[in-house]
Length: 335
Image: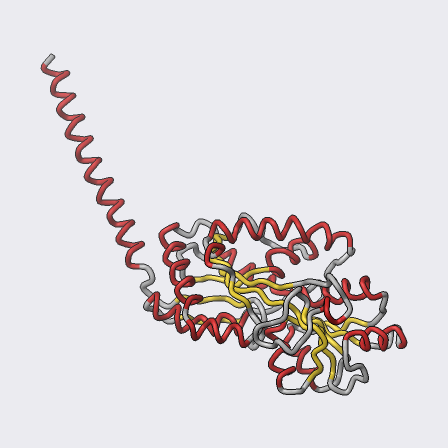
């Protein structure tokens, strides 16, 4: 009996020690989470500098720096329609110090049309949706047509002669062009670029005829009179450019298309870190100066109730379910 009692006493003592040790480990883990971030955070933009996603991140970066107390480094890693930079995020350490801008192109289109080394739903931890941007149907300023109906008529009168700039094969802009052909019965050549910025530069220079670029990339040039803006691809006019008609008003009813952007971390990033990042994003998106800046870029912020990580995951799944069959039916495949 004495031996049994002794064993019980030893076991009890061991359990107490284990409990203390466990509490200490948990305490260390909590302390580490509370200390985050302890060094600069890199946000990878998988497209060239100056593009819509790049402009969005840079508009948010100062407020994120204030909220998180660390420098935000924006790194452009472009190529393969955004899949190179997105792959790098998927492979990064899950510590909250390497994040990535994702969205419609890298998380919806690319997994269908490219052989990407990541799974869009399983290899990332959603942080928050950021903004969505409708597209503008725009042309070089010397193109004869002065409205959307005129553009369609001109394209039909010149089959296979016009050039449509895209941000690469199987990009969102390319997909918009394919849908435009199908909806209007027009035929034209696609000219792929390494991103929307160089494509827009050639449109401004008159080297290509037209583009269906996101509003945040084309609106500044339309305001400057460098290109002609015919219509916005949504059911309501842009707050930042109410003078531009919708496609419904301009004669192409129902041609609605938007590109959305969101912030992601590598999978297995600690929940406490995700929560801190989500709170910082929400605070940045609520800042009046940030909201004005994004509105000026033609970007619309997701409603507050849709800014949670879980809401982003659900939205992304719905987008994949909606667009994957459409993309496959179009036979869209990257070269």
